[in-house]
Amino acid sequence: MAENITRLSARQKMINLMYIVLTAMLALNVSSDVLDGFTQVHQGLNRSNTNVSGRNDAIYNRLAAFAKENPGKGQVWFDRATEVRQQTNSLYGLIDSLKLAIVQKADGPEGNPDNLIARDDLEAAAVVMLNPANRRGEYLRKRVDEYRKYVTSFTDDPKKKASIEAALSTDPILRAGQLTPSKWEDAKFDQQPAIAAVTLLSKLQNDVLYAEGEVLNTLLSNVDAGDVRVNELNAFVIPQSRLVMRGGQYQAQIVLAAVDTTARPDIYVNGRLLDNERGLYTAGAGAAGSFSYKGLLELKQADGSITKLPFQSDYTVIEPMATVSATMMNVLYAGIENPIGISVPGVPMSSVNATMTNGTLVRSGDRWIARPQGVGKEAVVTVTATIDGRQTNVGSTSFRVRKLPDPTAYIAFRDSKGNIDHYKGGKPFNKALLLAAPGLEAAIDDGLLDTKFKVTSFETIIFDSMGDAMPEVSAGANFSSRQKEALKRLKRGKRFFISRIKAVGPDGITRELSPMEVIIG
Image (cartoon, rainbow, N blue to C red):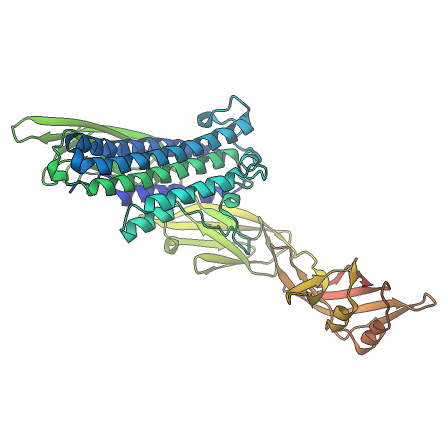
């Protein structure tokens, strides 16, 4: 059978690492260094896209050559490959047009995706992709869904199908600090710097090319390669990752495609012969920056002649970095548990440790729980990681520590559908619902903190027919019997006030909340 010239595991590791770097950067404030990082990753993805596209071209050309030599056996597979290419080119071109639209929105009509000026523009991506008038983000998601279903129909291999589905997944994404997942397009393009959105679209193009390569390899494997005379040889460099953390190692597999696997070529890198038969090239990563190398594969033919095939590749070494992000806000709140996300690109969670000043920091599964103490003081999270057997300090992040904001008092009731709702005053409230309510509750329910408070007391003020105020004190969080009797006598349109509301939060602080005006409906 035809040889698969794509090394999935190495490529996937590279893309996974790039995506982790992107996600880590997005959790930080947008700074010049972060924007520079996005630019480097975008450039690396563009080079990777060129390489992957070249590999796909090689597979497609082999199918074309076989179809020309043996149309009866090869034409059907070549026709399917041509359809796959057309679908890929269509989606790839759509993504290119969206990248250009975002760049032109940020830089103007002369904008160039390869030279974005307004990299920190936080509006361009959302205006282009999330505008309700054209719904380009939703349209892109649907196109990716259609393409994913189309390409996975060519393979029955569950592992390969699962890999493609994972690479092109558009499932809703649960972002840090949210209780419910966001749509794929919202999570990718809402409040994203222009350079981040363009980089994410370049990664999507990389995933599309990867999916195309898997399908082309599947079609090629259906061809009896024994009937085809190999007439072209290519050298391929398959790096474990193009992004290497300083202090680690760069590794790449250098292989010869379309030859007998028993033939072991001599491999020269920068003029030096590799000392192993597997084509494993290792280079130290002692400094940050971009590095390149080139060489030759020399293969001795049966007639004694030597075929020389050149190759070249590059890789990027990045500085050690850690990402520390508060999943609720970019601050920590005293007196409660604050979920914290901590990750180091390329390092497993088991090898990452962290400490915090002005409080405690405890690991909880793949996340961390921070409990700061002093309000108004900074809490500094310091991250270390075990890299190549050495403990390395990979960064620290400072957080402001604030007191929990005051909650809002409300009367809980069930609506006509049986769902629990909150009445917070200022508008008519059905008298039957009011009398059915046990009392008063309080919480921060802004969708971010979602913290319950315990009401300890409150006072109702009802005015009699003479206009005199008649205050009544509650029984803790519940209406007292005297308050209940007074409420029963109120007629529609009447108003009364709930004041002197006191509540205690998880931080142990008693607060007096704003009064509530209740209108009998």
